[in-house]
Image (cartoon, rainbow, N blue to C red; front, side, top):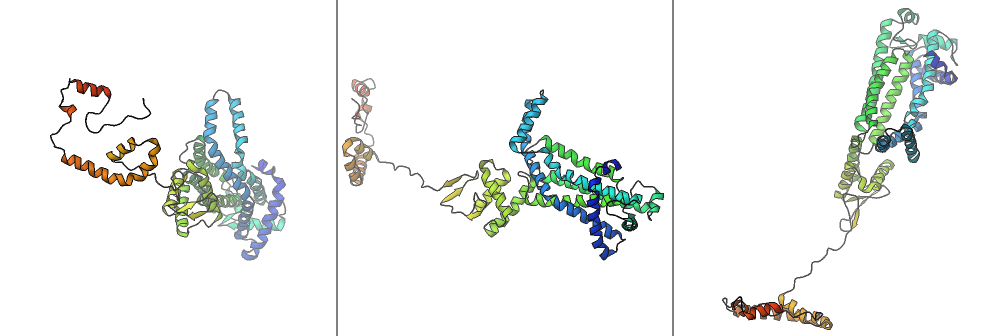
Length: 436
């Protein structure tokens, strides 16, 4: 570990200078030789580093989302080029280039923290061995060696012997109890951070190897922290526990306000957003407009939670616009369907009114040029025709049958009428004038 830490000695001086500056501030409040002054100096160093790494954290979130989106395509490439590993790698790199995704972007915050972590370890190791390092001179070194956090010196380790711990002015029991508690808290915070990422912020509709990899890391990282933690000084444990807690809180904020599409976190977020928008009648924050804009742009590709959100707005008389705003919608003018397709209201198609028998006959006997007169006189002839027809039917005897039905089945009259295509009884339908 000393060899690895020495590789980052170029940043040891800046890290020690930042610690000394914070120590000068907290020393005036708690005393220069107290564990609070030196411990809070390390915590402040972590906060300063993590604030500077926020842009990299944003890139990490975007890279992780992009990798989750590309998992189905990556799986297809792996299945297509099972036997040709070189072609598989080329297609993978081509896919990354086309989508603008870098797999290493998800590791940027950890890689960026590594120099500060090893530099801090180098500084604390120098305090433990009694050697000045960076801007820490003899007086600051003596003050740091006196500082204890809950009875454990900053430079003490879980694996240190009793003689070394006694040289730092502490007991072996206090050192091991404090370091054990801090290692457990460090591992537990790392496990919870990875678990909330897997259970709340992963698209449950897509099963990919990436999810299995993340699930494996959820158990591997805490074990690694526990194994390496016993060799870390108390000051480094303070550093790593602080950065884990910061990561956990930062991730909780991201999951709550910018969840992954299709995840349980998105369902909870859209449920809260539905209540907020229906109560106020609009989107009030920029982040809300960004989410609504992305949902509207998907159209038919929306997932179950996004369709539920759009339907809830429609039931409340609201409409989501393409720019992310929400306006009141008119049910008669515009109706937004479940698929997100906007359909303008139009008059319903009217079914044609059924004509009477006399109207059909009179319309058929009209000449093509008499269509105007037929339509103008239809209102007059309808009543008279209906009345005449009803009177004729009423005067006709019930047992009267047409002559064609009373004639024998094999008679010549019946055969000649059947051959001529005329109707057997009642008024005859005239032939179409277009037929010869």
